[in-house]
Image (cartoon, rainbow, N blue to C red; front, side, top):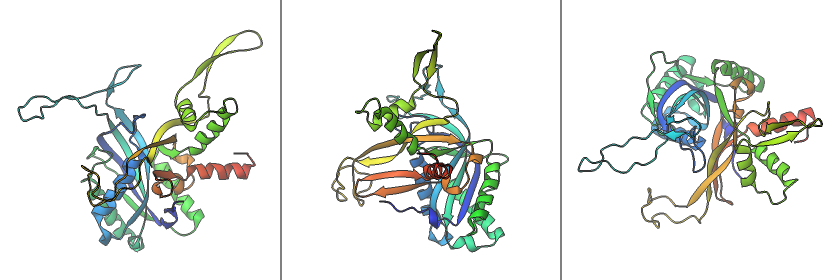
Length: 329
């Protein structure tokens, strides 16, 4: 259905502790907060194109560790975005407010890379990492601007050996440097299992119903044998920090020839109307990850179903661990 690019990863490019100002906080039609992962895979593509082929690096996946955030909102129970009205028309008057959600971020970006440049010595790898960091400064990160920090940690470009055990040791050592922080991983498996659980009592439950039910906090009264009633909720201890996230786009039209759709941004590329695809994600402390494939997100395309989405291999690690323990998924 889609090609997995992660076997091509021969190294990791780490850009630590980036301060991003005014990133886009509206990640989809139904979600807000942290930017969508498609924003970071898009950044990966833009960075690779701006560096050019002469650098000798190919980018295959990107992982994000969030160390801190500040949503530009106000209010207590009901949050509202802080909006600005600026004089933008020719008469100096103010135009109508267009809602824009903003968030300040402190993140570490980890790129899975390959290419001939990984054969360079350590000094040359450090120089190349600094060059990539300088190029990143000229780009937008999820719509936000990078702010220089007085004590910016140095970027790293690390060539990974072939031995999987040694790779795991290197990755676990890197994970300790990313603390405190949380990495976003995919939990498509939770959505499927929750959907199956709901269908046991309501056979007509859809995946959308399961996604909405898992995305909110449900409360209901529960009475014990002594007649005492207490309120319980759907998020039980130990279930993790589960969040609804957009993961890409699904086609709602045929692929139209280039130049046939008026006002398209690029008249040389085939055009297709799409809508957002949603799933579940989980914020995990990096030290709970055992391999770089659990952290990295990569773009995929399913031409048969017209699905353009970001994928992450953490669910496969969960299923493998369950199989090793003899647990039924």
